[in-house]
Length: 546
Ligand code: F6P
Image (cartoon, rainbow, N blue to C red; front, side):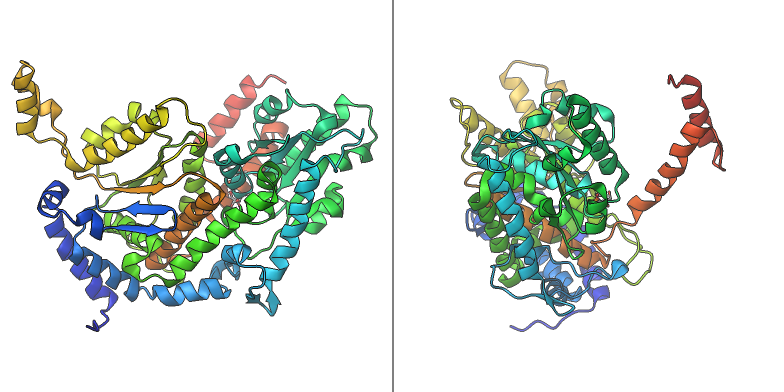
């Protein structure tokens, strides 16, 4: 049956009306009535399984949410992104992180240039350099082998490579240790460098713009550390520095040898750049083949996203569910819980990906939005989170949808510990869905001979929505799939909210003010501020010990 396409206003009206019905339903009843709910509401893509049956949706909800995707013209936006149109309108840039993981012989043109060929040229240079380091063919100034690589970068030039390096630690081959320094707080650099030797250390200055003060200050401090520890001439540091940037003039001005500069492109956003030369630290850790597998995983998810109908399309399903809760249930946040120690930085990575992309309140057409956009993303590794804030998920007063990421196999199994870990993840999603009724709580207390008046304390309302993403294991391919899945989820939501998910003007304002305040802190000169900021500057100057 061909359905007539609805206007956006009609879709929103239908969804609001439908929400009033769904709000009164409990998922536990749906599971009791329908033994096939999981069958109908899970999706597999290669080694990745998404169970979305523990959500507050029926078949009718899916139809209405699919209408929303259609009314948002999602298909055209998807084509525009993959095709290299300049959909990042406020910066007049194409958005082509997907081109970074295309097959080598693919063609995607921006302004008449095949960016896939461009990307592979830069990637090959970075992969070759990483192999040289791994095989001890790139030596330091004193001809010693490099054993420590320190990435100096922040935001997208840190979070992606750091998360991936940690998550794929079991795939690290060779003798290179990779470290990450992002914070301009000197303690970060200090604690990393205190264990390293200049002769065997290489710094990678990772900055798309090469203007980020935090990163450049850390790079200067790293250079000073090298020179202070050795009697080397200034130019000796060249063997110990590499850079990744779009700003080749600035890398040259910093004194980094062009052979050790790896190009980035303005059609890749920082938070989408782990697939590019920004992945150099990952390449140093896991090597060429594994890195190419990582790209292949991303590519597999791209193909799925481009071809699957909405109802079978993993990123679209997750995006629509997010919008359902955000815009129709007034959920303010979304928790993401990986049950994998290696994935401990996943949430931080995702916070930038999601919140820097969709934390916007103006549409692509410069109109203020009058609806909620990106939610607050939070979470941390299971099971630790269970013993910290899960109480609020179970018995708090807010609706908090969450994603559970659960690898079936561990690369570092210890006794039966991984089974216990997985059991905990599944138990949490079951408890969050089912809850516990007053009658059940009373029966339990009675059985144990306890005061049944306590039953009210032991009621769990349940009906908390969860997605469970199970994957065979965390490996370069599956991790590539997972990252691309969330990238596309964020994209779909941005399209539906009509915002630009690829700029980040909101971060700029604070950066500008920080420059002025920094000068005031040192010089004592004052520019106009509010009384609070003046008071804090005064207190700083009163207490500062030079
Ligand atoms: O925090 C803002 C931001 O521009 C991010 O978008 C970016 O990932 C980060 O700073 C680092 O920028 P760069 O790689 O240019 O140093």
